Image 1 (cartoon, rainbow, N blue to C red):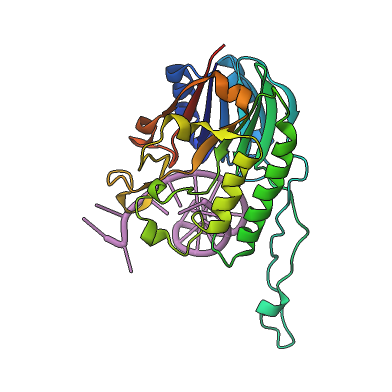
Image 2 (image 1 turned 45 degrees about the horizontal axis):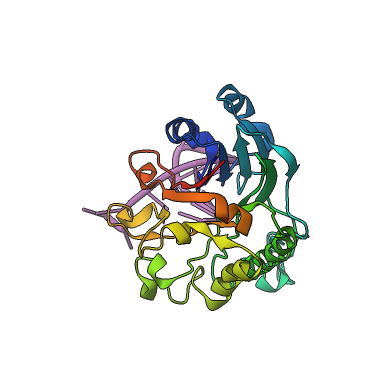
Length: 281
DNA sequence: ATGTCAAGCTGCGCTTGA
């Protein structure tokens, strides 16, 4: 079985590329992140015509995760148990002088975002994950990111029972090693590289998972993302932030990992490329 | 070339998010 994960940065913009990728790669199960569409905008029929059943969760133009499968798709979960929500701040309200005041920002109730979807495909429990970005170390989104990862770790630890076949794949928005970024000095003080984020990422190892892209592709400066700005891709100024954690039984079946770097080329590319995991039948 | 892209909403530019 060929399992892949890809942050497509808008499915509607990239639908032709996704279909071409499925055809070219022979992927059986594709986890997508950042579909950037609502469920009613998701092209279920297009994927059905291509032979794939799809499950999607999307509530707005932001986030959105999906799983496509041509080897079955069962027991869909549109969030993980205990998945934290994010409390957006409403518009400022006027203070006594009628001016917007930073002291009167209104925190809206936390909303569980479309960042995780699970389904059982061909005997493997697949989770398509879009970890919150964090924005800056001082932003409430960063606190949310750490809480989100911790809650996922707790849930995932419970799934990692003996012989379980679980894959946690997606855009983790964490740079685990200094050699996973083109310039670690330039990233100091930013999100993705903080000790807390790196600890939250590596905690999945202690929870019973192995990150198989690292196992099969241990080299330095292997990237899965290149910013659209500053000619990052031609200069190969990338980040390694898309990963696949799997349970031991699934790890034992894993025969290889491919990072499809060519998918970043040409006009209309996503800023991320697919990470492909091959699993023996 | 302060070397980007996408979506929504109002509108044909701005804001948000990455």
